[in-house]
Image: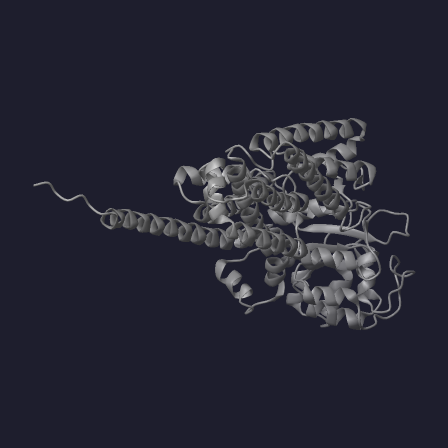
Length: 537
């Protein structure tokens, strides 16, 4: 007797079980990558020069803690991490959709010329709109003076390139080959244009061009993150609605048409949405479009899967790679710089007298490096109307306060008349850089800054520091008692003729009982010993 052939329902059961197992395996992979992304995000938020720990990060995110850790996490670290996640999601999905629509594993924003077009737009803004400039004569003084102009120009040209590519491809039936060839041609054209612009640019502008092309998550704020997240979310919804059409395209263009898919229309709309995500990400953060090429290739080698599952996995993989690379880069750079400088015996930086503003890019880079290696900064400040040396700031030191917020772990030793005159609430632009003799009035900015920011210290060594004490002795005694852990006495300059009246004045104040002996010892040497790690006994 011959066995009866199995019916279709019987043969479908093993296939259904295999499909369920495959789907479960893919879901576990997605959950694992999502958990890894969450873990790396916590590590990235915790990594840096500020002394935070994971539990403190969680408390800040839950609203249970504020202050300086809250400022660092909410205003500096968290936007960068969220930007890495959103950019990773957007670029990974954009690359996946481009490769699916064009049926070319090498298709990406890079190969289609979008990144080159963005770079060309940024170069034009830097050269012809004055967005790249120089604020001092130091070797690291190059910076982007108007980042929003550069961002807008980069976005406009990247979208212009993609529009021209899609229009040209549509004239030739919108075949995948025509899209790729048009993208390569326009990419080469914009690369040549960038070279031509650089040829006519000045050296400072060329340096600014190169600086912009370095992709950097640190350029974005919450505003840019919100814009990128909104566009990515909208595009992602559209891609998920078209997931079955993408599955059909995987089987070939003829098979997709046989299933009723409008291939040219799907390809045009999907490429336009993917290009929009890429244009916004590249315009905000520089050339980081390589994620769109690498992420799909990595996931394809992990497992063959349908487009719906594949896109989600690529998002998690690209996000993890972006965050890991940024965190590792910061940790390695800080460690090497710190060890090298400490081995040479450096204790800090000073006296900082460069005549540039606190928020100029070279100054910001210098302060970031000092914070990273734990070096305090002694500075001389002055207003722009005075023709002298010193870091530039206005009345009330608003730019200096922004640096205190941006670099919460950096210790500043305040010095000069421009600093000590702010001890009084009645300081004016005329007395800001002078040695006023009137009694100290309430409401001084200096005392508020010292109360709100633990990184503000007072250097009493110069005549300005001594004048701040002697102009109102009664106030000075109370001031020294309140800030006894934040005042220090050093040498304004090294010379045998340097007469230090400070020592006699402070000693007399101690002997008269106006200040405590412990306050005296802290100001004379203990605070410096603690902050600078001098090792004195």
